[in-house]
Image 1: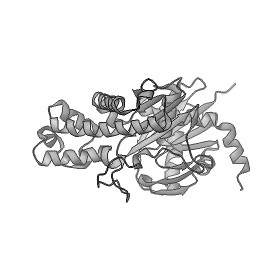
Image 2 (image 1 turned 30 degrees about the horizontal axis):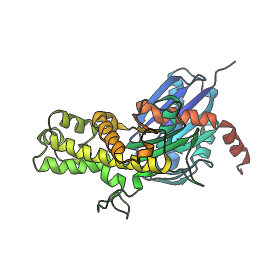
Image 3 (image 1 turned 90 degrees about the vertical axis):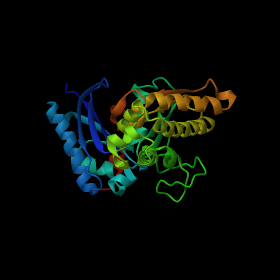
Image 4 (image 1 turned 180 degrees about the vertical axis):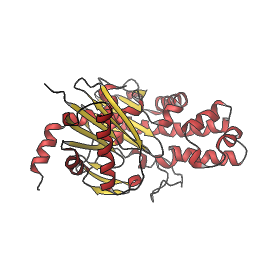
Length: 333
């Protein structure tokens, strides 16, 4: 009997990652490429399909044995219809991604938000295995969130949910591209941290950071921040701790509203600065959560690293196979 493979694709960030999993949910192939920013949807779909074919070919796997594809995309998506509602960094709006990829690859496709995919990966095979409900907060250039409850991804009527980065958290007048100011993203994303640290470098308060990359915000990335702190830039550490504390308040809000059993912290920023982040978030949550919730949650680091989103997408796509087949059959030609 021929083998059957499930494919997971993570389209978030500046790189796209394709993994192939066998029936035992073991990764048997992996390939990564840089994204090209705001290229058109058709060109983007061809690049995605080509990377999937290359991943199979490079590992001597027959593409005909691809049974399902799950793809995690930045921004809100309509999971039932397989439509990307909006992906700002790709320049996409109302793109029927599932249908387009099904035409290219001749297999059922499930589309989900990239952070939802990461949280689902951690729920299925990572730091939250066995939990009833799992929330995830992933700080990066923005801040994404996801929530899994009893095996289902939390969503609304026509869109994925948990856009926690765009919730108001302070009375600050900083903005993250929206009219509403003081959002979690404007206060605690890597971009927000980098902007504050660039000021420190310019004023001479972060000499190690200044020597490493100067005041260019685009170059003040997670590993650069970690190195500056390690080399003794106390002011940089203070900014990072303040951002992590703000994430901690967002965790408190999540606990009070949805009482997740596990809260996962992930993404490159958290991975590079995990000791600071975990310490501040746990301390802030324990100090501010209602006493009745004290023993009802755990805050954990993500376990699967960069593979979380692609793995979660692959598992979700495989589990959604019957529903996706029904959608394909009922879609007008």
